[in-house]
Amino acid sequence: MATTTESGCLFIISAPSGTGKTSLIRALLGKDTHLRLSISYTSRPRRSAEIDGRDYHFVSKDIFRQMQARGEFLESAEVYGNLYGTSKKWIDDAIATGQDIVLEIDCQGAAQVRRFFSNAIGIFILPPSCRALEKRLVSRDQDDTEVIRKRLEAVREEVSHVNEFDYVIINDELEKALNGLACIVNAERLKRERQIEKHQVLITQLS
Ligand code: 5GP
Image (cartoon, rainbow, N blue to C red; front, side, top):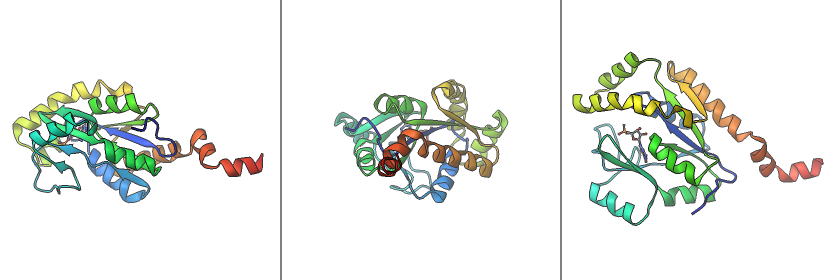
């Protein structure tokens, strides 16, 4: 298993539920064709608008546990009673080809990934207010009242991990948040160490 991302960047994006993270990441991927999103495995039931293989790989709890026992996940976590995990093989393949990777995972998963990839870049997305968060969770009409209550209760715990991330974005207006996200991605790509590695020949010629 690779322990460094070498030429590609590994972005971890986390956020409390209902922050608009998924729409933001979709918009980013639409704008930036060099980013690859890892599709997680989950035991959560598929929502009506979701497509297997696009939003998640939907599997039963049994299958998930078997995959876990075979060591197929880079990280895995239980979130709101469902199991979620990132495919180790997919990450290894993406790293081998030098791609920039996006992981949309929770804080528990982010901590596990950082243990393997200390140069992973953490981005935390926050809603503009508690009210906005509650409104979004209710209006998106994806989960029942009990699930929404669980998700709201979990916000405080999730936000307590903000210090573990390198960047924080407030998702008030999509365009503004998207611009912030794109700036982070570009700035990370232009970091000295990456540029020196990528442009070794040019730098040697010029020096
Ligand atoms: P949802 O059920 O709303 O799609 O996601 C619930 C939470 O699980 C979100 O915080 C999401 O980021 C997180 N999540 C999604 N995929 C993974 C994964 O592969 N690993 C971990 N640790 N969390 C995940």
